[in-house]
Amino acid sequence: MKSVLTVCIGNICRSPMAEGILAAGLPHLRVVSAGTGALVGRSADATAQKLMQGRGIDISGHVAQQVNQLLCRQADLILVMDMAQRRHLESAYPFVRGKVFRIAEAAKQDVPDPYKQDEAAFEHALALIDVGARTWIDRILKITKPEQQPT
Image (cartoon, rainbow, N blue to C red; front, top):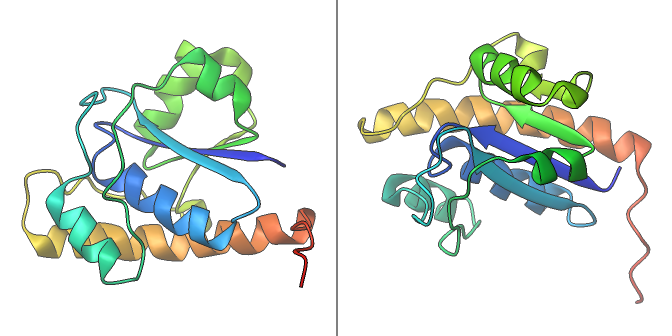
């Protein structure tokens, strides 16, 4: 496994937060995010940036991008926020079947969209993303070996 793609709708709230957590936990992999209806060119939502900064993860350089065939082909694993996004990707790009899962799949939960809501909504979404991402990180680390860093 070399690449993980996280997907939400606008690519400014949930998927950038998931990307940040996964990239921090899997520094040996390429982790990117995109949106099914991306607000292309926009940075991550200010509340998302603030909450991630509180965890020591900087997503201030994030730039929203639209999900596309190339991103889906490059990804070994695609993590979406809800079943509607999974169905959308599988319909638009049938070749992704078998590598698209909800980020909170283990908990059998969708991650609600906090866009234009208060900080509590972002905290709730981030809590679900965090638990889901850590489950995926553990699974991925069992099947991949980070390259040894020189000491």
